[in-house]
Image (cartoon, rainbow over all chains, first blue to last red; front, side):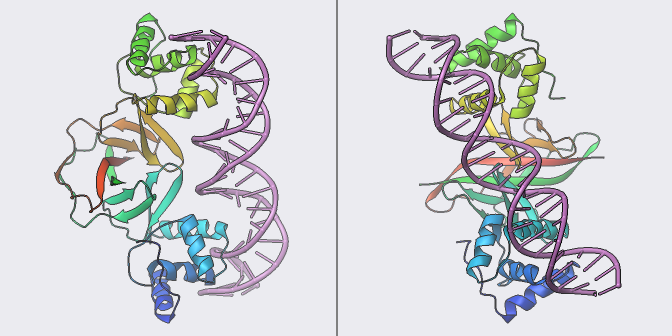
Length: 145
Length: 145
DNA sequence: CTATGTGCAAATCTTTTGCAGGCTA
DNA sequence: TAGCCTGCAAAAGATTTGCACATAG
């Protein structure tokens, strides 16, 4: 599943530090903790502010919810993460910044990656005149049987 | 554009009445007004609770915002409309209930239909085991040049 | 040292809900 | 008449913000 976060060991922390440095984001204690949880084990991860906040708390790191929001927004602005819109009531954030399709599990409200290459377009419209395509979001909604 | 609503004339009202009757939705005054604005001119329409509320107000019909929300939800449950998720902060509703791709104009936050047949998939994944695909949402985000 | 980040609580915004009264079938 | 609908105001969530304090470069 998606919500098992890596322990905050040295490997995770140095990976996080490189991740922040690469994007010129100032490495504060809170940002390093959150970044470790996000990229510490090298896997792509999908979080909401709430799930990341809870993960930080249970890993023993004290970070306020407001800071989690600010940090996620900062990571997005720095190009480290992407905001994915699948649910009108919650924002999801993805550590993979490439444009790729997602599965959204309707029962657990979980967001995961669709297998790579799972979707391809045989046709994409020319953008209407005066506009360019900034992104194409594909969300495959799944119902558990 | 999308926000020019039809006048509430007799044609629009009777079209609205048929639309509600067809789905067994009780035709109250408020629902008829809102339905006229939505389907009165036969065009597909994309609204938020807010835009529909304002349209009702400026057409001279008094409908409370809470009722607009309740009504949109009732129309969705009756299968008359679909909720489209494009923006984490707002819900959009579409009078076209078929699964079709949308344009989302990032500058004005407007939602419109992508030209029909604009997108087709050359490949769709088999759903993961134990799940079935309930819907595939495609949103083409546009940046105005 | 200075700019930037953090934490808390309060504010904001969208959407939902409780309840008293109104209206459709 | 009975049950569903409406409107208001208040509640509920998610997210943002103001401000005093802390910290990275």
